[in-house]
Every structure is written in C-alpha cells, then in structure tokens.
Image 1 (cartoon, rainbow, N blue to C red):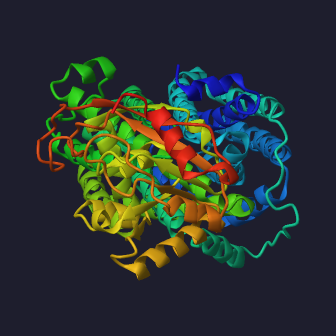
Image 2 (image 1 turned 180 degrees about the horizontal axis):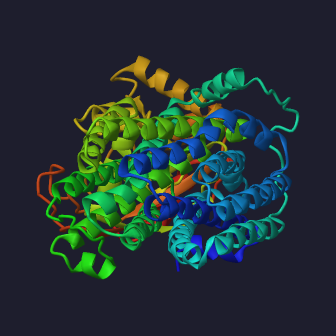
Length: 623
C-alpha cells in the first residue's frame, strides 16, 4: 500500500482530505451540470453562442482567484487554519443555495454569474489548502500528501462529471438538492480538522488589492526557484483550462459525439491525473523529485501533438454515444492521448506544488501560495480569452490543441534554462533509476532541518549524484576540483551549488575559499557532504581519512552522519577495471547497490579514527 494512502488513517490528514474532496466534487457537480445545460440541453443556443458561454463561464470562475487571492493569503497566514476552513465551508453552503435557485429557474445567465461567487469561495480556500500540508505532514510525507490531494481532487472531478449527467437527468430540483447537500457534508468533514497554528498571527490585513498583489508577487520572487516553479504551475493551468474548456465542443463538433462521450473523455483525463500523481510519488522515493517535471512536460507536448494528428474520426449527422464512439477505428488512440495527457500532467504538477510548499518561508507560505493562485488565475483567464479569440477567428479546436502542445515545449525549455536544477535532477533521477537500483537504510538519521556534515566512502565518480538522488534534503557537496571540472558532471555539480576544493599544494587559495563556503553553508543550516578519503578508491578498499573533516568540525562543531555505499565497486563509474568508464555497463542495467546511514556522532567525539571505523563497519564486506 502506498504511504500516501496510509495518511487517510490519520486524523491530521483524513478530515482535510475529505473536506477538499467534497469541495472539488461540488464545484464540478455544479460546473458540469451548467456545461451540459449550455452545450446539450439549453434551447436556441448555437455553436458560436455555446463557445462564448462556455469560455465566459470558465473566465468568471477563475477571475476571483486573481482578484481575491492576496486577501486570502493574508487570512491564511494570520488565522488558525481549521477555524478558517470551517468559515469558508459555511460560505459555500450559502452560495450553493443560490446556485440551486438558479438551476430551478433554468437561467444560463444567473447560473454563469453564480460561478463568480463559487470562484470567490475557492480562491479563499486555495492558500489554506496548500499551506496546511507542510504543517500537518512530515517532510517525507509531503510528496505523498500532494499526490493524495491531486488524486482526490481529480477523483472528485470524475465523480462530479459522472453524477452531473445522471443528476441533471433527474431534473433541476435534484441538481439543486445535490449541490446544497454536498456543501453541508463538506462543512461536517471540516469540523474534524485539527487546529494548526497561524504562520504570522501578528499580520495586519490590508485590503489594498493592487498593493497586496504586488507584495505577494515580490515575496514569491525572493526564491527564484520557487517563483519559476510557480510560473511552471501557472503554465500547466493555461494548458489545462484550454483542454478542459474546449473539450465539450471538441466532442460534439469534431468527434460528433454526445455528452456521455464528453464525460467519458473527461473522466479518462481525471483518472490520468490521479494515476500520474501516484506514479510521481512512487518514482520520487519520498523526496521532492523535481527531476520528474521535464518528463511530465515532454508527455504534455507529445500527446498533445498526437491528439491533433488523430483526425480520422468524422462527425456524422446524429451525435453518437460511447459504444459507437469506442467502436470506431481510431477512438482508442484518442482515449490513450487523453489519458496520457492526464498522467503527464500529474507527473508534472505534483513535484512543483511540493517544491513551492517545501522551499517557501513558513511565515509567508500562504501568501506565496496566494501569489501562485494569482498567477494561475491570470494564466487561466488569458487561456479562456485566447480560446475565445482563436475560435472566433476560425481556428479549429484540433489546431488550438496543436498550438498548445508546441507552445508547451517552448515554455518548458525556457523555464528549464532559467532553472537548470530541473534538468540536473532529471539526470540524477535517470542515473539512480536506470543504471542502479538503490536500497536505502537508516536515512531517517539525517535531520529534517538544521546543519550537519555527511561523510561517505568514495567508490565512484557518481557517488555524490547517488546521495543527492536518495536523500530528501538538498546537499552541498565538497568535490575535488578536477572531478568538479569533468564534462556533464561539472553542470550537475555547479547547478547543485557544490563546493570545489583542492589540496594545499595544488591551490591554497581555492582550499581556503572552500572551507569558508563550508562554514557559511553550515551557519545557514544546510547539509554538507565530504568524502573524507579525499579521492576515489583504486582498489575497492577504504582509504585513510584526511584531516579536512576535522578542520570543518573544529570551526563548526555540528553533528556528523556516517554513510556507506555498497555494491558500486566494479560498476561503470568505478576504477575496478582500470580507468573508470572504460567498460560499458560491466554489470548490466539496474545493478543493485545500497546506501546505509549510521547513528549520528557528536562533533566532540568525531575523531578520524572513530569516523573511519564507523564507515568501515557500515560498508561491511560488500564493496
């Protein structure tokens, strides 16, 4: 059973999960009931009018995120979160009462207008929703928690889609009752959320929207990796709103199918998002693995392009149902493209949300998430306007999808050039998951926060990359300058902000600068890793430890965590066959290796002899 599913047994997660699941379900029950009413049931609505209403509805739901997220972020940082969530859920009940009246009146204009109020309620909930997770969950649970939220959200979307067809088929009174009852259930679930302290209880709320919008955007830019991750999330929602908004009319006017086929395809997309979220958790190995983001971006481009080239389905005069649709020759390809777009989206988005939560300052986390919501909303409103403009100009929906896929490739490449850490992490992830299978033991000895020095035996040229791929926290590695300068490895080490070091007789100035950087890193609460042997073993045996570690601890007496790599000797990157990298994959693909951590050692006890003995014991007989 995935660790994320086990979170449902805990009170610190289960009530919140049910609350957000019911909220997402209700949003989609209402929105898709409205979409079906406009696209398939409302009388005297042409294709052009339907396109306009659907895009206007999408824009009105998103607009409050742009307008009110600055206030929502302040409220979420200032107030205790469980109380705030309960008040927001009471607001949802009142809005759904109005929505029920609008359904009974069968008024497209009023139904669309109420979407603005629904968007306001969702905008207030967003910063609380995502800033709550780092407080309620352990660091190792953060990716799994985000995966569960993503999975739950899109399962709620799926159920909202399916049930909206049947509920609206029972009549508009049934739809009115459904949205109100669901809102009440969401409030009931929220009462079980445990109290979570405010991030900044002394914050003074400002209702100056332009000023506060500028302030939260400035807060988000304090950490450029966080800011560019927010931009990546916003771009994802630009693509997502384009696909979701145009899908009803794509189904009707391009595929010649009815609303049940629309629900089928949207359900496939939702299942894909959920599957991609869980896949991301499994592939991440309980760390925030942003190396998966480029893989998700690649999938969004490839399957978006393929959806355009799948043009063999021709709409007939009468709208077809799911059975006839699936019986057509290339319908399976359409389904695969839709599912894989969802999977790619899940793999893309989960690490980005987790990274923003992890690296944002706790006292400003809600406001930074509010900045994310503002930019998400801006991108989604622009996407709605762009879709409206493009379709009005005569661009077909398949061509619009093709444009999105090509633009995605360009935007992703631009972001990855700005933040090369994404590509670095991808290369590390590929190394750890294609050439090696790593068994990890005892890594909970490494503290979740605060300074510490990691020490490890040095077996191969990729030891640092393996450690970086297996340990949750970012690490500042101390790397011999000649290895630091090797092609490809140089890119990885520079991007990871590694510290090059030389022996005193080689470059005394570089050596002194390295020890200064090490001290600065420890003062800032970072992890630093050194290979005390000072060089890669040429025999497979543990070499004599050099005094560099002692000098570090004399200057900064922090905890030492001993690590040992087992099974790397004889691999492609070791010197077992003479020069490293001289025999291609001598052990084949997916060689099994181990990374083992020992008990923490106080700086006062950390003599060279003790450290070497601990590493030798951890390494054991397996080279």
